[in-house]
Amino acid sequence: LRFNQGVSKTEKEAATKKLLTYIASKKTLQLENVYIDEDRTARQKKPNFEKLVADAEKGMFKTVITSTKGKIAAEEKELAEYVARLQACGCELIEASTGKTLTE
Image (cartoon, rainbow, N blue to C red; front, side):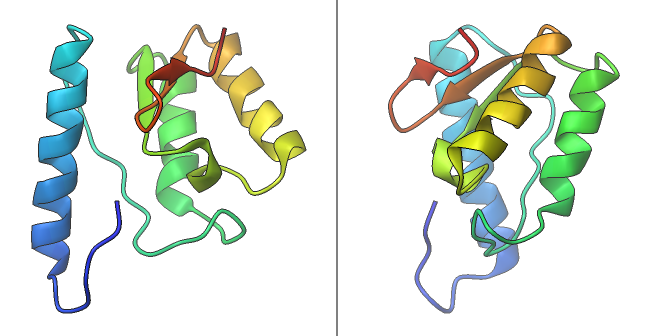
């Protein structure tokens, strides 16, 4: 999601959670947690995304919803590595902007 300047972190997190809850409900999923890397590009380190992947590998959930695959990785090779890691632990990766499952 993109927000105008002046929108607080709390407002951003609330709007993100609301959107993800809506998307999850459409797929009959329950939202467990929201991992947000504040204003990061795909080329920057994303500590919360790394935590998300680690939690998926621990079996804490089976579905990940991302706004776009471009938020995960700038390069197709890096995206493929993350998709493979999520697939290896039986996790589905859904791109919210298209509704496509990226781990098929």
